[in-house]
Image (cartoon, rainbow, N blue to C red):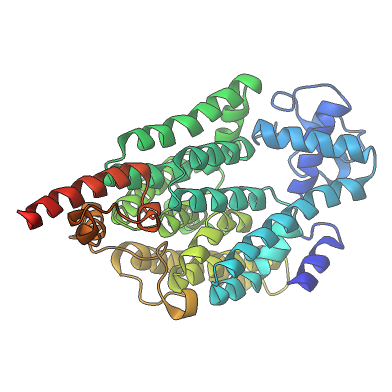
Length: 428
């Protein structure tokens, strides 16, 4: 892993030039004192970074928090493109390394190996210096906080991620659905309001950031999108395809959230919802698939994780083949047939089938990966835990602090009330 990380940052980006767009938007702030959400790189053709910028007529579509980091990096770099490049590549490498460290600590060894050996992680994400790595790391921290019943911290982390890239807001849907299924009304409200409030605050600080993010890829159908065959066969325009794809992605996120509403942990629901955009949107790129990979890896569901990382690596390969002498049949397989087939497998695994194999601690299923049967409600779990200390309550002893720590404050009250009621019945 260390060797792959070092190799990824020793040279400039191989494919995407987004890293240089990050740098240019930062230089707009530090060098030219203009608003990167209104101005475009084409206005400064003599800048040292301009020759390597790809999106020359597009204002920034990134969150104000990331734009602040871009400005700080370019201010430190001065005119050095090497320092600019390393400023983004090293952060991406650090974010990926932290995610892998978390998987190691959770003893998700098979998932860790599967993720660490994916070419698109090191070539597309780290070498490209993409801020999607930051997004994935912050959202992994949010999922961990959620599973530990720290709702306010989870909401704050999602809000921070959305200020890096607006697409992080997708994860709000599964988290709110999980909380509603557990009848934690206030926590659900907090989870919905705080990230959305962060987006509103970001729009106030950087007017145009939300509009730019939502319109940057409108009307564009990616080379490796599942919607490309539809566009080629039907002749439907790009804007219409974008609207259809957006609606489709929204429906899938809701469906995944509802299907996994009784999960004990948020890993599969959140990771699957984040992965849907890269799998099924009209405009998708390899690094978009990294958004949900750490959360899915933490869940231990190797089947779903394998489909998502395969999609990312095959998409990266299809872009590397673009313009080559062997693009023909291999290019069609990678950019047309593979996306459709993998999306079908992904939806079948996450919406229809129950997970069959988990990379848990010593081969066991971890709490964050267990899914309850649809007939088993969250309240039945509380009742079963409360009955485990009925005997202690019957003789006047309080439940152990270790038992109560496994529950959230609201759940502790529910368990205690249920346990006392059952103990009174047993004494009577």
